[in-house]
Image (cartoon, rainbow, N blue to C red):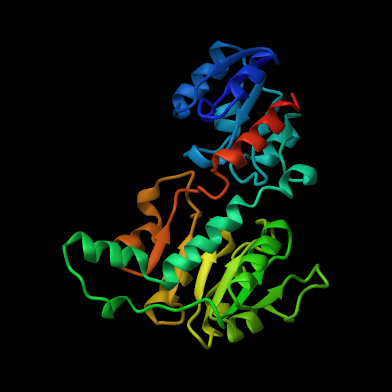
Length: 306
């Protein structure tokens, strides 16, 4: 087995050593598209170990054409960094952590970030930081909200949604759940969630049902100008509609760990550009699962599938 490692692993205990027991390993932890393509061709790579978080390209025909790659092993539950249709047609297997429930049930890192983004928006931390960095000391512009008593809506009640619910309830929030596939739902529609809640947090996979599920129509139904949190995928929301919602005060803020075009030119991202122009937006670079504890468990698990 010839393995190309195209995601950082050097900072994780034991992962490199375990990889070396699986075959000939070529580490290109920070390579760009051209470097990865060259490695795949020159070393006749048959297996790729990857993770979406640092990629600015998609693993598809342009990268894989005329290579020997027959297996892509991603250390993630999401797979929107891989052209799954192309791989299926070309008999390239994909391993992911999507259904490795024994592992992922003990990986709360992404939900912890969602809760952190919520608190950061509610307490206006970035604005306060900018203020004090200029040696100013006025609390009035930064009066925020407390979690106790807030109505918080959670979209998707799987592993991460359940963790988010626990954190919110521990802080005294009133939690509403929308998940049409779970009996735990206590609202009937996404629209109802936007009508009721002060904060809405998204915890769903991207598919034909969820893509752009948060759009102009849904946002316009909001009655309390909620804060919106997204640690799922950028495509869950219509980003242009989110920008419009922030401008017309239908949304109070947007905290996200993902943007739709994160595998393309970030300079074209409406969300990042909106943040730079002063809208109440916080963007983190897909760091949800990026904790030492979470990565070590996930990467070792993925490597041991080889």
